[in-house]
Length: 390
Image (cartoon, rainbow, N blue to C red; front, side):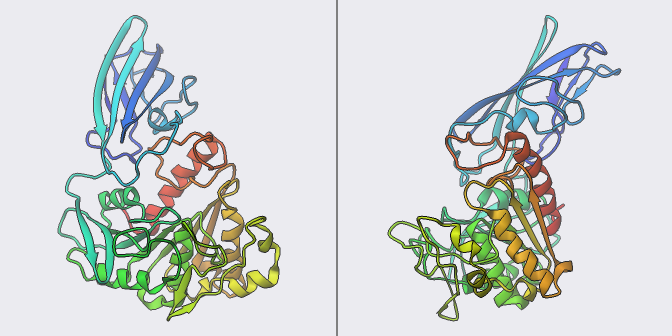
């Protein structure tokens, strides 16, 4: 028997699975994967039946046991929960050790699934127009860039997302707009123009098309992405809000108050929800308050993608995203605003599908393991298409 990755040099988000050959046709096979990423270790397993050619391709073969069931090319990589967060800022490869057993025969192999593709270069950015991390694809063909905005964590936004998108041909800037040297310490009084300046800076870089970049916002960053697209539409391209909100909320971070201003534009506070910390969701029922705070998504010139989880335990992202979806419909922009709400999926349902899920006791996510994984596979495909990734 021979055991190897489905494709040499595959990225963490590549749906390539694992390939086992030289097996008696119809034989039952167990494949175990021992994985490590940024100091976190976990083990996944699947049980399969070899096809008539004596092969098991986990990208196509259904698992009938182990840590996952059915067909999932990522099943051997994600299907065991880890007991805490791994460091999303560190772009180390995922180390994979495989062991396949059929009757008394066992074969083993090991390899790595990269987060940063060969040819992608990373650059620290600390300039007047932008701060964070720039990931540039290899090759000589310029492409539309993307600015990635984080949420309540601070620092450069989604470096893993940027790295993977760069591996698929999209120049990506993980923008830091708070919680990073040279930026505010907390999410308070953040100028929406910080996104616009970053877009202008990115499109001026070598290897980036001179056109308005896409903007992808994660959670609270989704508000900021929608605000930038609605307030300065001619300088922002396609926008994606991942488990975000169609209305702005208040400040966040140590020493802040939810009634303090989170976002400003032209030096003035952006209208936001007046949240009650004892009952944070109550104000969503206040139709007058919601109407006053709605982000004018119909002003966006590029297409808008909203992705959310129906069982989001962090905040009701599906309900909050529907505010933007409904406004677009009322304002005649339904054809440019698409909302996909995933059933049985939580706050991390838009993370790339090749990574393990964090155990419920370690993260307030929501949804089920199966629901979240199905959402991650579909949402990552949609996001890649939205920003023009290969």
